[in-house]
Length: 258
Image 1 (cartoon, rainbow, N blue to C red):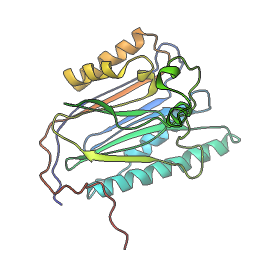
Image 2: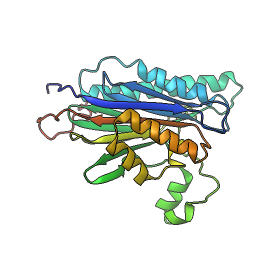
Image 3: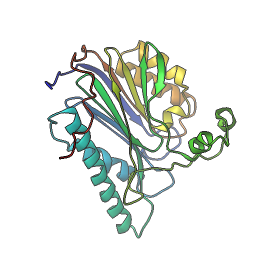
């Protein structure tokens, strides 16, 4: 398959918010290889800022990929490497819990892949509306999936512990979703500091109607105006170039093992 370069309108912003003393979020923009990421260091634990930084630095070391499948494979390898580095940091701190959520978007050859652990999110906005591509790895989402709670019942729930993260266990679980990326699709990657204050419909309204950086800045301002209770990180990616007319097999499919 011949690689078809894409053009993107990209914006990003990260902010400590109005309450937290430091920003434990990190983000990565690697438009040159079609990779964008948000990592949210686990609040209430030690060195969340270092954990999120380790993830984005590890992802930033990815070499120019030979294919979409290679890009996904490198991404997964770098996330597992980051996990080991964070575990080593934990051991150096006498076993203190250190970890971070991670949400990564890859776009190549007219397709996308989303890989994540935790409750940082990836949204897709297109002519059909806004869709949360990722789903939260959290206790509340498990209760909803199991039928114990409805989504309406969790609006004022006091705690929503995450169930997956990078740096917490030796063999972390990452979830991957792939799909076709159409011209003018808009992806929003964000930490929960945004979704705590800004509803999905508002994210759609801002990201779909503004340039990417303007939308990031406006949504940050909205979150801060509503309290800014957590760190806020937003990355917006709009696909501008026509997609490839290659066959329908998703290029992020892993190559068969010999």
